[in-house]
Length: 199
Image (cartoon, rainbow, N blue to C red):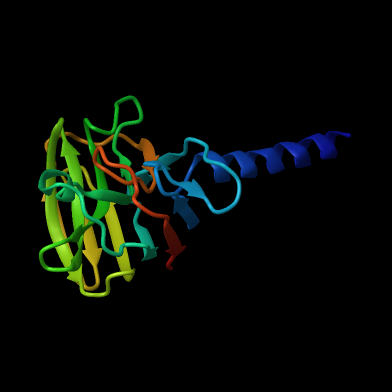
């Protein structure tokens, strides 16, 4: 009986850790008319992200595929809005608009390119930095690595490296930030994401 209780407890611990602690690898979908994504199967639960473990910085390493980046047209101001792919906040006790880092994208109507950005909040101040562009309009695929130290966010994408200084020391835990369309406009058509974990 004791062995059974221990086994069930360990199983529950694994499930809870999987659900509530980690990056949302797998397939996700933002349906037309919505901002928020959902997994291809099941439903979302809030997930914590551990930024470091025993003073060792934790890296996210992922291959991202976006299907549905194709042409969309908003008014000029909204066309500049950056849609979000993945990332995390750096303090579980604050809203992510206070301190966070994400990878984002938008369709550049003038150049007919998909632009990939670093998108961050540092002590409430928003910044976006263009990382790279892709001419493929409907399907975009790239590898990304990202981490946060006590003083910087570090992002590597397709062998390009960007270091972003931060003014607020991160906590050990933040919240996972999942795919999101907008800005204030909703998705004009279905957009799917596959986030594959890389070693």
